[in-house]
Length: 455
Image (tube, rainbow, N blue to C red; front, side, top):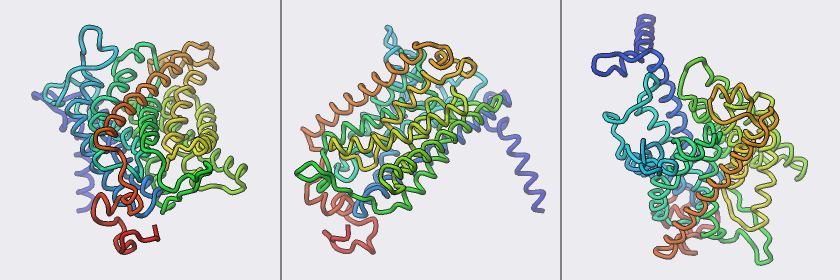
């Protein structure tokens, strides 16, 4: 009986591509069905990365803010979904802005309706692509929240989500992925080192500059106090969840089953992450005399961020080099931001910013002619006879996108600061955002009294 049930389920799965996407009585090609299934699986993997962000930000901050961090992530992903559906997707991938504006911004497909939106012929349904791109927008937004951690008002998250998901992120996505001016120049960013990670990091930088450091982070003489996160097991599990989700992020960006190229992209992704983790552990051990777990975890993430732009363009040895350099870079970048008194609880600027820049640049050095031809974007890198042309395009790409993301985010948050304020009161910050913003603690059995010294 069990064997018959399993055979029936298997038959349904084999028939799924034909059954699920038939329209007007005409079944789609088997390749479209398989592509649709793959894109949807990848979208689910990317969306599940939000679980990693919840654990990462929660574990990296103090116990008195744990419930707030977890809850606001769910709330902002929900709001981001509505805003991206209403306008964000249209600005990123809308078919025509008219009058030459399409190089800067898309226009169309607002309040996305799969009944009228066109998907690529014989590739995958437009709905699948929408969900996939929505998950990317939500990741970039979650990266930005690192700069808000432990001191921003809940209302600020609401307002900034509208602007970031509705305009800032979609404009940059359009420039590189939606047929905008950087796409025309051949900018190579396969899965988002710039579009997703650098954009989110620069928004985080704008936020942390305007919010200023957390209470007790820096002394009057400029020296820094270490404010430890409350759960290193959470942060470790977070990195593993993000690592697994990244295969949807990178390999999913092939958007097709085809000849199995997504497997190669997953392969280089794994090598980049591994290089980042190992390099970060070794450099922290060498410099500090101890192998810092937090730095190691950030090194793995930095390797993933860096290889995201180049996973489809580089050979395996180059993927390892890209990851190794990212792991070293994140260590020194974290020290730099600490020295200049930029309070970055989640290391967003180092993991997603510095590593995102390096990952974008790496294509200008390591992109191979064969893989460039296969992907069909840009030209070969400097080390493969391509000269400086692609490297220059990559430099322009990260400079312009990073500057726009920072400037737009800074202006929006500065206006919000003048109108309603960005930061909770000193009393609320000391008490913790769980109680001051939500009325109860994430750990009610541990934190029984307001103002407890245990946090």
